[in-house]
Amino acid sequence: MASLDQIIFDELKELMDGDIGEIVELYINDSREQIAQLKTSVDGGDIDGMVSIAHTLKSSSANLGAMQLADMCEKMENDGRNNSLKNPASLLSDIVNELSRVEDKLNDA
Image (cartoon, rainbow, N blue to C red):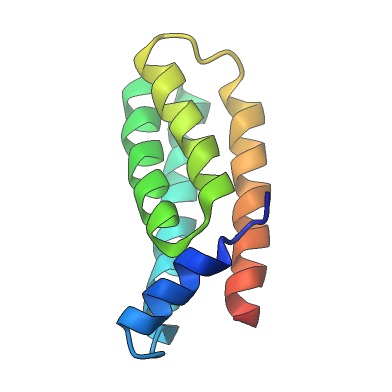
């Protein structure tokens, strides 16, 4: 799966009459902040915090077409809600790596 679903991204771009730079910048800045908060939650074992932040990051990522990242966040959210989150630090690492790939794709778009 690609880091960025080009169809979703292009549809958003069309909705914005091609002027998507501000949305991309806001997404990147917000996502970095959410990752920092998620790391704090993971380090502190705060499951509710992980669920909440993962939910927010999932939604904003899906809106931009970052579906693989959204899926990873959904896993953290659902596993946290179901008390089945086995290794949040490993999943966080995967989320951070995928966000980096998404940022690269967005910066090239």
